[in-house]
Every structure is written in structure tokens, then in C-alpha cells.
Amino acid sequence: MSEHQPISDAAPRLTELARGGGCSCKLPAFDLETLLAAAYGQSTPVPPGGTALPGADLVCGLEWGDDAAVVRIGPSLAIVSTTDFFPPVVDDPFAWGRIAAANALSDVYAMGATPVSALNLLAWPADVLPLDVAADVLRGGRSATDEAGCILAGGHSIVDPTPTYGLAVTGIADPERLLRNDAARPGDPITLTKPVGTGVLNNRHKATGAPIDNAIAVMSTLNRAAAEAAHTAGVRAATDVTGFGLLGHLFKMARASGVTAEIDAAAVPLLDGARQAVADGYVPGGTRRNLDWVTPHLQSTLDQQTLLLLADAQTSGGLLVAGELPGYPVIGRFVPDAGPTLVVR
Image (cartoon, rainbow, N blue to C red; front, side, top):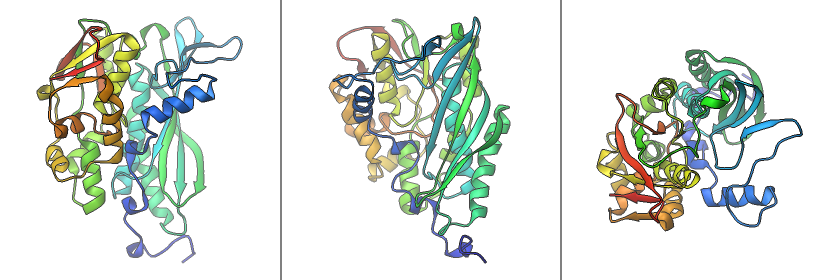
């Protein structure tokens, strides 16, 4: 047996090798906006404007934190580019690979685009974990891209102490039919297509090894059907709910669109066990940072545990849609700018 193939039963749990897990590993939203503003020559932490090469037609860039970059290459054709990767959220390597791939594909669906091709991004502690475990991760990713009808060909790998996996995805879209962050309008219902709570359940799983089959099923589900329903309904504004939580992504959409989002907390679907996980203290640091970020823009009298659930850092969450989709819960409504960007009752 080579030095890169340790005995399997001596290998640690995948989540033991991750300082954090899933999309809760994102840089805090305020820090990210500060970083991007500095990188693009601005002095304040606001969404910086996009830049494009001469002759390129940049439709969506960094302006309002859309889920992917979109470049028009023809009257009715645009290229949509995104990438996403993270350390393990679960100990099952196939499930982690499937979840990471579904999460990366979600950025394309959230733009109203169709994924066409993808590349693997893999960092692996080859002296700690067997390569056959990495193969299971890649097979999980392949299962998601196969279901999406997306070509998965090659990619890039490095040796690193923290196992990390994801995809770089390229899609295509009609630039006139994009789902954007800045297109919500007063009166639009707010629809959420997956329950929330994956962050706290993942954190409980990492700490205790407790099974979270319900969370794995939700995270493994593609957002393709939801995106198709949004197009059918004539929706123009959407995003997906990932590391900044429901409140964070809703704040970004409302801010970009110049409206206030009013949410009925009782209408927000929760994963079974999520509220108990918060009560038991399994709250990721990313979830707390999300709530801190939106609190200056939030009007609510709800208890802290409920607000933490609404700010929970999600991995491969659902679409947040400015419009009503049959079969999915409406959780609130966009109204004219009323002062606070978020009102939660």
C-alpha cells in the first residue's frame, strides 16, 4: 500500500478535517463587499461596479452580487460563468460530492440559465485520506451533472490538508430572460423553493455524527425544476439561498431592487430538527455573522432563535423568487421602500 493510500478504517471522518463546512465557510458578507470594493478601487464597502474588456458586453458582473457573471455574445445568447467549492458538510463522500455539485449548478439556475459544461475543483489531503474516497466525491459530483444534462470534463486538483470540492460551471441564457437580483418590484410575492435549516443540521452532524438524511436530500436536489417554474411564471428576479442565509440573500435582492422585503416567519418552511438544533447550540459562526450583518437593516420583534434560523448559512438551498410559483410556499412580499430593507413578523 502506498503512502497515499492509508488504511480506510484509520482515516478520520471527512467533517473532522474541515474547520467549517459548506457555504458557512464563506467570507463574511461585509468583509467580502469591503474586499471587492478595494479590489475595484472604491473606498466604501458597497457592491462595486463590474468591469469588462473592450468589446465585451457584460450583462451582470459585481454590481449587485448576482449569482454568476453574464456576458452577451449575441442578440439572444449569453455565456453564464460561476464557480463554487467548499469543505465537507457530511461524512459520506458521495453525498458531499453530489451536494457540492448541486450547489455550484444552482448559481446557473438562479440566473435563469442552462448549465452546459463544468470542471471539477478538488483539494485533497492525499497522505490522510485514500484516493478511492476522492473518487467517491467525484462520482457524487458526476451524478449531479448527469442529472442536469451538463458535461463534466476534467478540472484541477491540488494536495491540501483540507479536503475541498466543487465545480466551475458554464451555462447559456437568453440575456433578455435572466433572473436577476435587481429586478424585484413592489407587489411581487416572495417564494422560497426549499426549506431552511441545513446550516445548523450540518453543524450538529459535524459535532456529533448524528444522521441528517432530510438535510442531505434537500441539499442534493437540483434547482432546475424551480428555475423552469420561474421562467414559466414570467419571473424576472431570483437568487439562491446559500451562505448568507435567507435574510442575507433577501437583503441583497431588496437592496439591489430598491424595495423593502416583508416576511412572515411562520410561512418559512423549516427542516425537521432545525429549530431543536438551534436550541441545542449547534449554530455555525457564519449564521451568527449573517444575522449581525443584516440587523442594522432589519425590523423585527421575533426571538433570537427564530432570527438565527432565518439567517442560517445554507448549503445548496432553494431559489428565492420575486413571484409566485405553483407548489412552492409564498413567505412574504416586496413593498415600496419603507425605510428598513427587511421587515420580519
